[in-house]
Image (cartoon, rainbow over all chains, first blue to last red; front, side, top):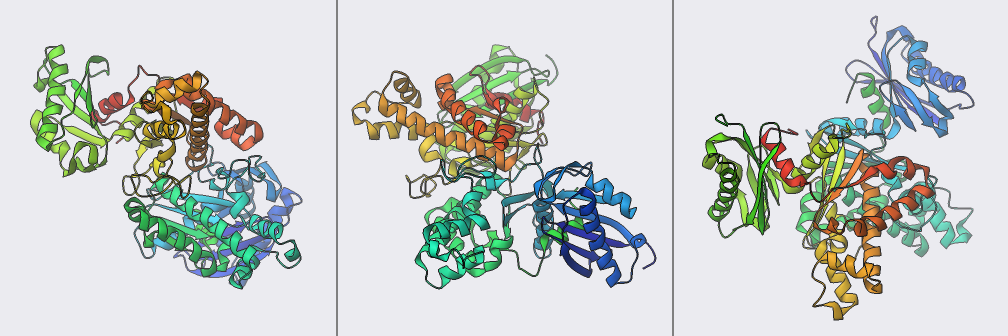
Length: 316
Length: 316
């Protein structure tokens, strides 16, 4: 490994930063996850440096061997300039994170919104087995958003806000969202919202239910209020899938993110809702059939692999 | 006019066929509307021939002077081959309408779905004053659908179904839609649905209310049930606009179609709903501000001008 052949992908989150080191052929060499420090931009750069050095050390490589770096960042970013316009969880506003990382490692660095980065990774994943040209990657975690690939490329939208399905108003007059609107999809199906709804219905669970996974587990054990929440979440999510397909007519929908870690307990009720739509309607059957929906397997991290693809100019 | 310089645009509807003859610079020379005959493909071809000959006669031109023909067709079409896969209102299934028209006039003929054709026309219209690269054209008439322009080009989707917002399920368990699903947007905001809802609430209007325009007129005159229907329609439509923007992040939304002929009576309640969303939320204000929404003026026919653009290879 004498020439600059190594690719680095980073998923920079508000609490944790994950990093993947790959060779020029896209084989994983090393992976690590470390805490993110966000007090200042310098602290964040320090986190990124530490993450990169950690994986380099694992294969006894030096920064000079890095060919390029890709970064997925939770916020509004400008991929052309590498500027983070706003990333609340990283405490960044109008900060040239791309150029700063590039300067530190003397290597090209490419930036993209984290969900869009994961969509690039999901696209690479699906393409391993199917030659699709379009998909929507739906991330359901602390927030809810979609990254959309059309004609093999990311669709960013005029303001870099395409795919913000978490802020589609689905329940007018519903719960207030962080964005200021009422009844956004995110106020019903995001992880914290799932927990909040169960605790509102069953306050005695306040100290035992912390994560969306706990809600799915309680539902599986027959807890009626938890089952009602899961049903409500599944109905809203299946409808959101139906909308994505009617709007974009993408070939696949891939679902990932923290909430999906409940696996089949998460997917089965959604599949059930979609199957019912398909039974009722030839249009739904044509566009929303069995093969449309993929659950991202937990062992594949689309955010990291997407970042590696960004590093090599994937989907530009 | 000795060389083949004339452009023909056709909007082939289930009951009427409109045609526009333009010169090479895009100036309108003649326009006509005639009844559509759909008993057989031959009858439909006869309608198209008659329409074209009508406008040619007006300027004393011959078919040889036609450079190319563009056609907007209500149904699922394959623009690459000119085949109409399914157009229920034209009584066509897997019919090579593009090649048939091309053969009859010995000139190139280009086919596209009618709402997408109108989106191309709406795009040309907006570009006269603003250099936008994306928009959604929302047609609200007998059906409801959107045509979407991204990066200056039509987005058709994998199955040619992108923008089928009329079949987004917005009221689960609601009225049955022609497509088989329950509670599609179309079952609430399409012209026939608007009439149906008022008559259901006020059966005594059965013989006086025929068109959506009558419902808007009754609402303007203070009829409470009509006002309730208009409010319901406006809420659903403004939410659909919000969804389009969150999904696609387009620069403009242009609204047209028969139902919009009620003009300000149609638009004002929608603007009111959107203004309220913008007041509540900086995100909505950034993406859904005043300048986002355009009502297509009734004197501009986007379907015909879009067809003329198709004729010259626009948006391919």
